[in-house]
Length: 198
Image (tube, rainbow, N blue to C red; front, side, top):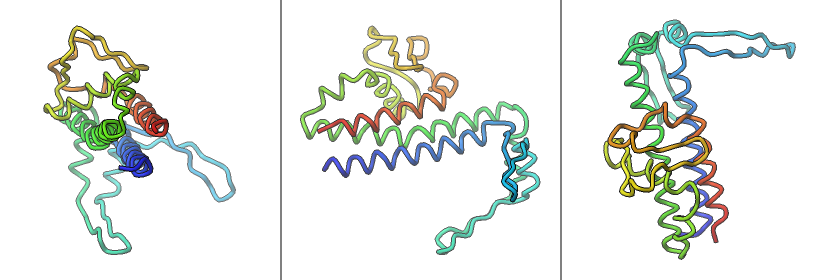
């Protein structure tokens, strides 16, 4: 794999991650504050509740211009699920959080690992300060989202505001332990690392 191909794939994964993280924010919040831009250029602050918006919309429909996507479903069940705080809502958000992380994160990590192996730069990859944290997160995706590490004696793993401690092992990775901001920082860091490689 050429470096240009690696960079394109890493950038694509990062874009996908940002898109999914944005949608995760949408379903995990009860309400949003937005600024409406008026024709005269002024803005009006407005707050809307997600469940109320979904109820008002009634259904969701996609019809792409090229006819490759045509999809419609009612939103009343979604509105009920996202309204308030229920164990079902928490479970749904946790599952979606796992999905948001799994594909782009695992793919980016494996791309870097493969490229570094093939170009003789694996030691550089393995010695960056974020590697233990990223490896632990990547491995949990292959083990039903359960966090575990082989080198328990090297814990805690710490990078920026992410800390992996022994009491987190054998438990599902939690969005409360790995925030959206943390994910974004880690994707940006992995992307910058790819740029630094030969």
